[in-house]
Image 1 (cartoon, rainbow, N blue to C red):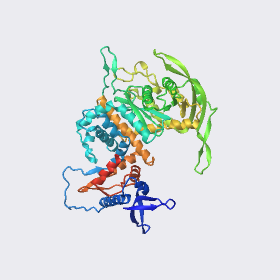
Image 2 (image 1 turned 30 degrees about the horizontal axis):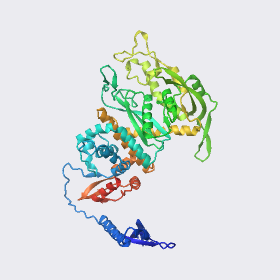
Image 3 (image 1 turned 135 degrees about the vertical axis):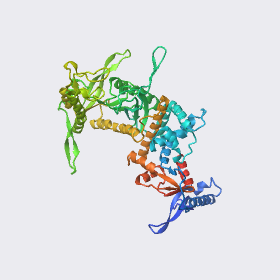
Image 4 (image 1 turned 180 degrees about the horizontal axis):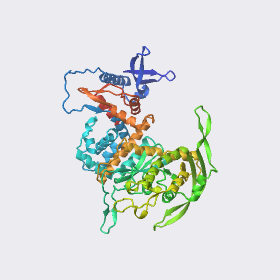
Length: 597
């Protein structure tokens, strides 16, 4: 390194910088590159007695440091050296990318500040970092997570009992953590909350009974048990917990909430949306959700908020009025869009058609006394038909129809549980209340409901989207609704890559803390995708982070064995060179230090 002085030909001012001279092997001549820009000499003279001498010493120090970091590594090895029994020398450095985002969101500062007045003998920030890193790279139980903490270059100075103690603490500050993360994402990455996507899923627990409710001396339920049997997305009989998740227009989660497993999806939106609006300063938003959330109460609530929020919701065609079904099935008004053919020309797509209208729809809204009132809402209604959706609906129905036909022919083979999915296509069927078996006495036999099948087939492939945004185009409305796949993908990630289910903790506060760590991990995963410009699927990114690992080769020297296009992209995104075969321990610590600044 040397001090480079560059004179401006027009002003005569001298600019100082530190440069590194080297020989370009490909071009065959010596050149240099600027390592650090310093400033103009006349301005530096106001700060330093002798800027030239000062920055020459700086350049010498940088040279010495560069030479130290790049000096040859000498390895001493014995051919018959044995591994110590039970040792595991493999260490992971890929978690540096996770730590980088964790610290960009200032979660370390948040947790340290929060525990300042608490009598903890351990660092809750460190516990949460381990839980999040493990959830992304090696999902497992809290006990196994603790046992594997030595695979990271991190001082996790706490005991297993401290992990469980932290769970109770995390549960109490879960809402504050979400609010803090939202504020940091808004500040660091930017938030697009014009659209807020919302959906509900559930997670099962391998237990037999529901959690008991808390009941006061008057017999009033003061707290509902969390793990309850309900409508499982995976068709399991186990108790479940409902999770509602909000996501911004870029696919980054905003907040989540948990509900007892027997809570109807439609009842989860308002409490979460109310809290989101109060805590996150979103302004007017347009909520996008599927038909499981569509209800008169939800629509009226959004229309009557102070910001007069909007909605883009799907509507069940089969649950609509007869007049609405008639409008859907009328061919009048439909138009076909053009699609690009392999030869570059455009043709009308006869497998897809759309029509729309602005209309007044009447909805039922709950009154304070438990009754219902009718309200009129101005909406844009977009109806489209897709042959692909129609074919899929028939395929999905086929299994239930086959089971229904077999049930009618062989009722003795079935009971109430085994008849799941088929009963909607069967008439004249009763079950024994104790055994669940089908009753066939007195000539009473199940009958296949052919009319039900024909009625459903007429509406196959038709989809209805209703929105408060009456001035938006059909394309905007359909494209906006299709963005829901992002939130479905997030649920898929939590259940597959993050292995959030089944849940192995049992106390309610521990369950809440488990999902908080999963939420933080999900947000970091989505931001990591954003950093690499969505060039690679998340499973490949996480697999690569796991592979950026090393083994102790000699004293304080670690040997790495993986490099790929993805590891290079991740390294570029977070400012870390993952391409070197060997690194000294102090270099690894410097990388982690930089990722935490």
